[in-house]
Length: 316
Length: 105
Image (cartoon, rainbow over all chains, first blue to last red; front, side):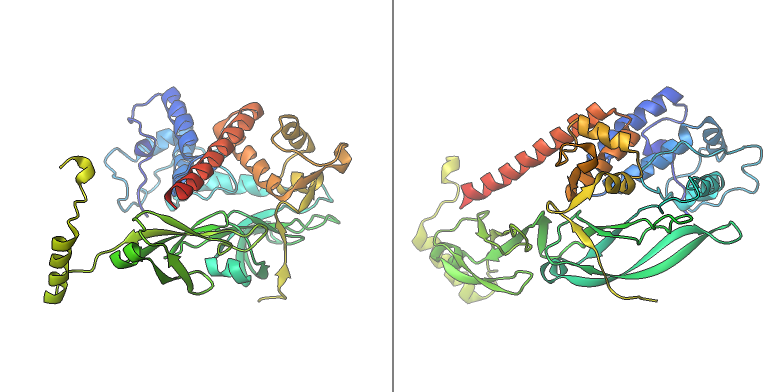
């Protein structure tokens, strides 16, 4: 288990006041909030921040954490000292870091006890109540958005067993992913959430679509972006070249006199839908290596016959 | 232990959610959703509250609003402003992308 330096995460000194902790949290929370931030790992950073704040804002937990000493470094393998928490009482509650926040092992080992039990009691709201809705993410390949897919989804959720203990239950659902889904879209599965209480209906399950990173294409909504290398002669003379798409290669016409950085639009080759997305090929020009004598000779010939100065606009 | 294949409903612009659906999916009260409508964060179709229909993406907006309200401790007017500004930034990014493409080809 890795040690977590909560002060470092929040950019604070160990003697920071409670007010400073609060201000640092507010500022960083706005920066890393997954609904606001454009940073790729915003969600992970925000969770880490929430965890750090959950400990440091609570004087009891903070004092206990400080007891561990200042000599630990982030990432260092950590085992809590025996009875380290003797004399501290954790009441839990208060932390609102989003949906069913999952804390690090480090946090759970130190502060886990109070939280679990507080969560389990919360849902008893009446004798006949609709079950809770659940939200989960489903990772799909870009290609699957083009043709639709069926996915087995394994969900784990804490449930109370007959003895009243919290146990993790696992179930597998086979779900159809329709063609034309976009990043972030939700699929609603009626009745697949928590069972209702008494005569209450079961809740619903909402699946959020998330694409796995693709090695060729960058995905923006239904549009795709592709870096497509072409040769200097294809750029200068124009050519028809093969370009990959998620549905297989297509022919793409490169106009004569193409410059590097130019983007070509392939209409309706993005993710299907109404309207379908487009595929953009961002052209890069790559040079063949001058390894053989013949290649060297060709370059020398170009140098001699083309009289080309790429820096003429720079005045040199 | 796989049962038969389930077919869900894709929540897109054409999907309609009732006020109850939305409240339940966000684990929140009717009053809170009504406040979102009052602030203009959500724009349901239908005049009377009992007949309100929300589009699929409303769910994402409502849940984003809820997380921002809780995590950043801003009031609903602030959430509404932040969402509007973020959408404006997104629209401008999109225009910039199109502009770069049209200018290059």
